[in-house]
Amino acid sequence: MKTEDFRKHAHAMVDWMADYLDNVDQYPVRSQVRPGEVAGQLPAAAPEAGEDMADIFADFQRIVVPGLTHWQHPRFFAYFPSNSSPPSVLAEMLMSTVAVNCLMWETSPAGTEMEEVVIDWLRQLTGVPEGWRGVIQDSASSATFCAILTAREQATGWRANEQGLPICPTLAVYTSDQTHSSVEKAVTMSGIGRENLRLIPSDDNFAMRVDELERRIAEDKAAGIVPACVVASVGATGVGGVDDLRAIGELCQREQMFLHVDAAWAGSAMILPEHRDLIDGLELADSFIFNPHKWLFTNFDCTAHFVREPDHLIRTLTILPEYLKTREGSVVSEFRDWGVPLGRRFRALKLWFVMRSFGAEGMREIIRNHIAWTNDLAGWIAAEPDFEITSEPVLGLLSFRYVPDGVTDADSLDDLNDRLTLAVNDDGRLYLTKTKSKDRTVIRWTIGQTRTTREHVRQSWDITKDIARGLA
Ligand code: PLP
Image 1 (cartoon, rainbow, N blue to C red):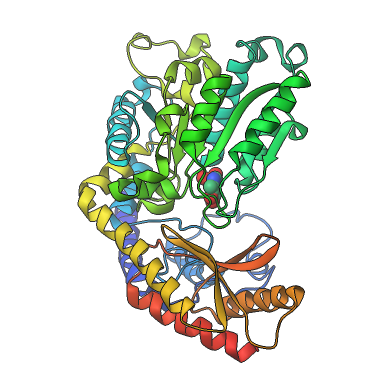
Image 2 (image 1 turned 180 degrees about the horizontal axis):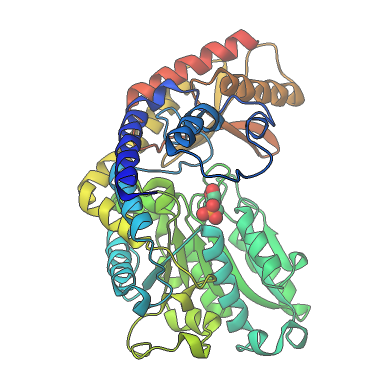
């Protein structure tokens, strides 16, 4: 493509992007295509001859856009949010254009040095303890994997990497029954083994039961198993369970166990000092992760991974083949040694753009609003006798159920709420997801989109009530 054509198409696409963001609320939130509908419109093999960009872009609008679920829609209340914002998109455009690989300092000093600076800005903004250092990973799943590997190395006296697991004692990892599946994945990938993952029951408030944790640790020790790591959640995926970091941290210190804290969604809200009680005791942990790509206006992918002892993470993951040795290697940070992939995107740029463009106060105001509207929504739900709140708001998440008169048995209520979720999402004006909580179907509602207003929440609640009452 010639430069003048690149310029022409780029301008046209930027116009499309701005219009899309202004009009994203005109689309059904969840894509309404049927399985196979997108693939059926694509040729089975790549074209032999190059095609015109105007045609490719037209097909993007015709084929791809209907097959999108619009995560930036202001009535997207499903899963957890996956934020974007104009400053972040602009940074992504520049990042794609310079297309550097920040695998080490020398391959783009600006990438490494900006990452060190902006991750420390984030540390200060969220109240992560002084002296901790951070790195940007691609996902919470990767960061948790790195944490579990570090815990494994510490618990085996750094022998597992060198000699392999067969010569090591059996290790155990503890987490609550509310924890995200990425922990189970990390435990399997690290070779610790699914059978050695202990799912500790949670209490009525969805927090890990520390008495049960203590009991399982003692039981394992008595059986000759080495308790290696606890993974605590702050804002677990189902209904936002928050574990008691101080109590768990004190136990981990007594038992010399690694404590990893997964706050993938809730961590962004720690920019609000009034909610830092959720991470009280964090100084007792070894690592802490959260996703600015969930709730801090930064495009996917961007996970902040903070560690108390960076040397332990680096010792676990470092590799230095001859072709990666550089003159400055010993005096600069080499983030390739802090994670799994060698190649790294320049993710710090989008955080830099976002934090400078919004300012800390600008970001706080939006998240404060999301939390306030979640409390408003809880009030509206509680005021309707045929609905019930099934978990109180945790920051920007609550869950509820439709419980009309006359439907009393538990399975019928589950079925009705399954059908309600489907009906709302087929309608397309908003998007909700469901989960099981205490073995019953509940509907989750998360408020966290960059463009959501209180009016969007109010309208969406009215739509939900109407659809529910139509079903009954
Ligand atoms: N941890 C929690 C609490 C989550 O809610 C999620 C995803 O929603 C994850 C981890 C996994 O995040 P990622 O997609 O960044 O791997």
